[in-house]
Length: 108
Image 1 (cartoon, rainbow, N blue to C red):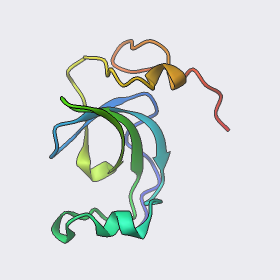
Image 2 (tube, helix red, strand yellow; image 1 turned 60 degrees about the vertical axis):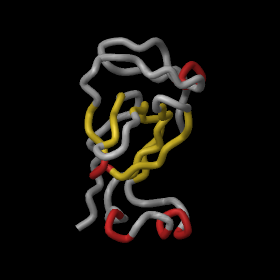
Image 3 (spheres, rainbow, N blue to C red; image 1 turned 30 degrees about the vertical axis):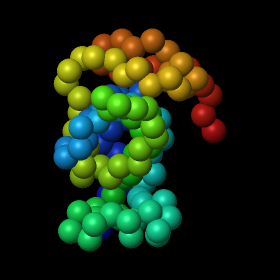
């Protein structure tokens, strides 16, 4: 059965379960919507089920800022209370408050 309700919301700060990065959710796909090549590049024993929400994140780690595409099963809410420093955040969101970033753009 396809899960159609996303656990995390736009502007929420999340972290990866296995890899050391955090990010801000800026888009959600109800199920996998990336390329097959991208999916096949994930080691088979780690590949997530395609029939779950996938999140687009403005992500950061100790070394860089980037865009990440992560399955819901690999995310956890971030409980540090710390903001994300990704340079693209001001293009989409307002100031960090109460653990999230409020949207500052009109969505279709």
